[in-house]
Image (tube, rainbow, N blue to C red):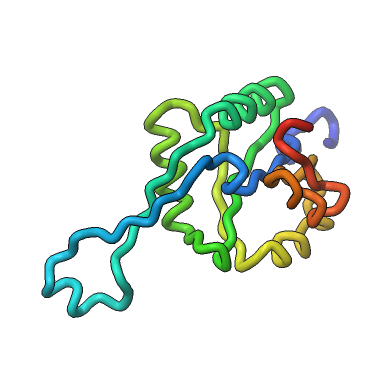
Length: 145
């Protein structure tokens, strides 16, 4: 900040692993016409997600109270794609209860851990109980925010 200019200031950032705000995931084979299935590169499957509404509400309150920028993160090795996360963001936006500002997919958790020291505005990484320790001092459980 130079002479009161705050244009380069960024809000504190909280990274939330998508599995920590989801109760269940159901993979569904979509009915695809035979011709389209014949030329498809991969089987057509979609994910039906049931949200943990209490976790989302808690994230919304915390982000609003402390002015946090919240990022949803998934890992490719766990089956998440950028398209999946974009769809989840769209659904949350449509319902009016989206605490997330961004969504990002990493290859695996090691790629995310490798970036953590370079994120100056990072306040923590929220993951499921028992998995928060793999992020070192940035690891948080949802109840500890």
